[in-house]
Image 1 (cartoon, helix red, strand yellow):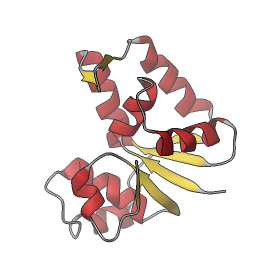
Image 2 (image 1 turned 120 degrees about the vertical axis):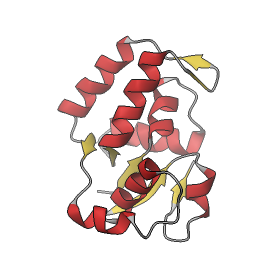
Image 3 (image 1 turned 180 degrees about the horizontal axis):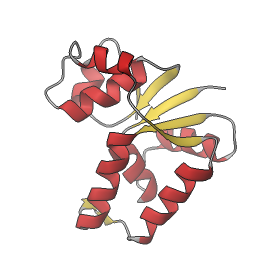
Length: 135
């Protein structure tokens, strides 16, 4: 079964119903049990923080109840789950050419697992040769 890695913006966009078609199709496939989506723990933290602060995501404020929904999905679903960065991932972090640690961690998670692609709108990540990106 194919595995994808979602960053915080992908998860937030999904929760706000503002996610682009290609990424939305992958989330729908995960809902149907056809693919799996891993969400690095750093991205889970970013999602929760953004919702708690009431920040807009593509013009939408996500209701607080979506935090519980996300937590329940990550706890119970086999097709969408949180993942820790492994020691091998931490070894990769240093060599990833991105300015922000959280982005390096997300890319390292993608690179050290069987992830097919990263679901992100991040232009800097898209420029990396080693990371396949879908948005």
